[in-house]
Length: 559
Ligand code: ARG
Image 1 (tube, rainbow, N blue to C red):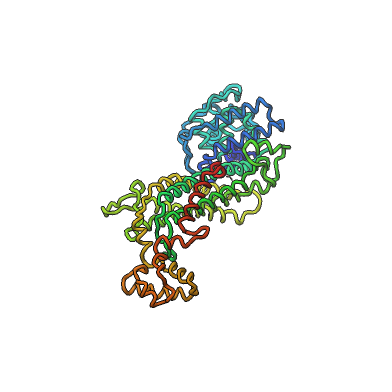
Image 2: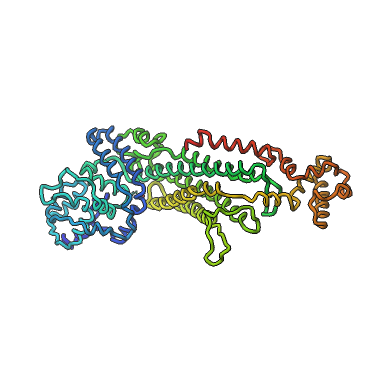
């Protein structure tokens, strides 16, 4: 193979291209890029890079003046407008193709010779003549389009870099392998070759681990806030319901009367557990991987506490192999979201069910429902159905992460790149749902009369009746049987227990007395559950006050 032919296949411009002779397969190159989705980590990548810059300044790699330039440059890169939407894998930004390098192969070579990271290419290609349509030139255009404004025909690269233009950003976006590469490309554009010093003593393995921790930490806080708002909406609804009663269900069969507030507080209990899971996961993950290197730890004597502190972590991670390959925090986060999804979905299911004509317990808020294009009378529970459906994605993310991780040898493996999208999707899904759920919950209108009627009929007081007899000294097993007989008597004559006369009841057991009818009235059937966590009115009032207190307390509002 001629020198020229070899050259045409040589890769360049990647963060790792030095040892490669051949370029990446073009389709594979596009397909393996994480930039289209990890571009959202730009703020985290910039923050982590600043922390790293401070750390290597303390290790005398950068001077104070250089640090200042790097920080300014990173701030400028961090300001890049979100209007530059991520480019789909396999697509090339047309802005990039239109960018004209406007220089000669000779000047490109000269420029290359000044870039230490491309010295390999320089050595190999000093005698290569590039035709205008040479594919290598096109590759170089792609790789170096960010440098297009340099006067390559003149004295080589100048140190003066003008402000980032839209076309420059587009070029970097089309070319960047991932967010780390993108920031490096852009920073080079903004501050020149000094940008290439920033990678001293670090690896993308620790960078992505750090970026994801920062992302998850923020998402934990957002999710916890959303959950707290939802819990407060439920508390508000419960306060409005006062002493209203409804049937509780076991096996979806009417069981015993409960307070509507008691039922709503069941969801508050689930939410509070979810928040505590988030707080717990946050505490465990809040350690900084920076300084872990690619796998074995940084090769410079870095003071890792500098970066940890700068990024608000509680300290550095303990083990470099673990830190670069650990994704437990993603697992935990998605697992918590999966549980949140289960709770949201159960709530959604109950609202869907209770809004049916069959139950008639609530009127769906019109603002969150749609009609049917076919059946004019319909009001469909779109919101609750959609969140019931979307919660499947939360469980799906946890499942993906679990399967992704389970067979990976230590330490970093490229598979880990696949862990990002499910996490982003789960975080976005949870944020979307929790952005609407509190308002939906607040706007719910219960048909309290109908709920009460359902609670007061159908012998839901049978358990209270049996308790009445056992309080009179009848063994519960016997009491259960006697009340069963009384229920049959009622069923046969179309009467509730409180409409069966005392004389008839005494025919079943002499233990029935004057006070029986009061003992099976709705309020009494509620109040006989007078234990911590029971539905007695006084207990629920206290529980409600405590829930409000807890939700307004500093520990939760901090989130
Ligand atoms: N985009 C990569 C990821 O998300 C960054 C780390 C790359 N590291 C490497 N050794 N190739 O995992």
